[in-house]
Image 1 (spheres, one colour):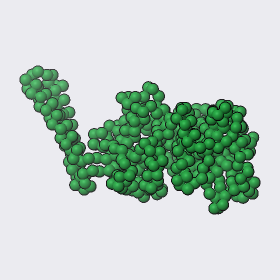
Image 2 (cartoon, rainbow, N blue to C red; image 1 turned 180 degrees about the vertical axis):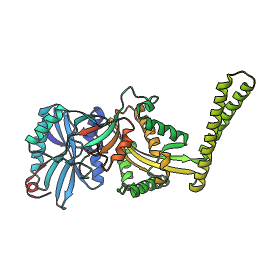
Image 3 (tube, rainbow, N blue to C red; image 1 turned 90 degrees about the vertical axis):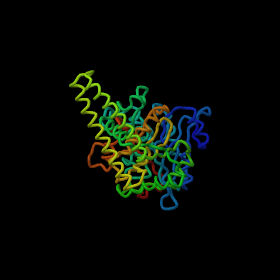
Image 4 (cartoon, rainbow, N blue to C red; image 1 turned 45 degrees about the horizontal axis):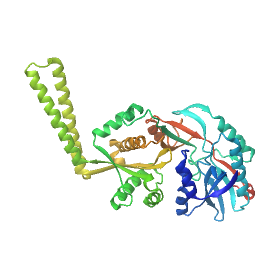
Length: 416
């Protein structure tokens, strides 16, 4: 085995040929994205007989202008059941950066589930994680017990994802999510909520996307990337990046609902005629006629509400936005935003249902809701409400191994 640097193009060929799982930070294109953002990167791999057995993209995060903290997020990618390979990679990685005095520390985040969960309930700790931890600590790597939620240069240790096996289809998807999500998605359909994919380079689309993100940013008091970033992302990964908006077309909703009412009124009148002619059970028919009148009244009220909405806000009501990224086996729910004013229309649910069907029809193995804090059982956690929203889609916590760090000579002296 040899430890060597490889190009993003070489990694691209590897990832196209095999079906190993990886997240965006280890995608072949990620190094190009970081280079565009003026961050230096290296892809370091182990080869045997010209076959890549392990790899990871490392980002050089500047520290005090002259030094670096070199970091792998959700990596390296390798077969962690192969202890010889794990030890070889981590030992060679340590030696590789020991020669560079500008590198204060090297940080890795083994792409391996440490603990197995069902929803948020702990099941077991994996044997491979126990062995990998022993190898790392024996080589001098120390667990940081830290992640993205307190240090933005590190990877999130926990993600929430939904496994999409062959038993989940577009037709039975609603049966494979919670009753709350099912009810809410059905309500978005009745409220006329639609979803479309936008062109981030179209001026009007980009303006809508950014407006929703800025409204969200103000509400949650957390910075959301601007359109420069989203355009850069699209430039780098092309059709693997998806930008979506949920919206209501008031005129279209009124037209569709008017047709629905006309059909209901015709069915009601036909039933009333049959009742008068004694052709149907009187009790059942009377109850059914009452249901028709109640449903028709509800639809008329919806039209009145939409007309008021249109008068106040215009014909097209933009509700929410989201970014999705295709990353190997995963379709990642990367970012999201929603207009506070139109919260009741539940735009994010409509987008998620739309993209879950996309994931199923395009054979993704995971619908990945991405990072969640390690305090997923605490109501005091900063993202507690967001996690409860994700849990409505019946997934599981994936609890990855810690971020580990090994320091070079100067890094051991300084408090970094």
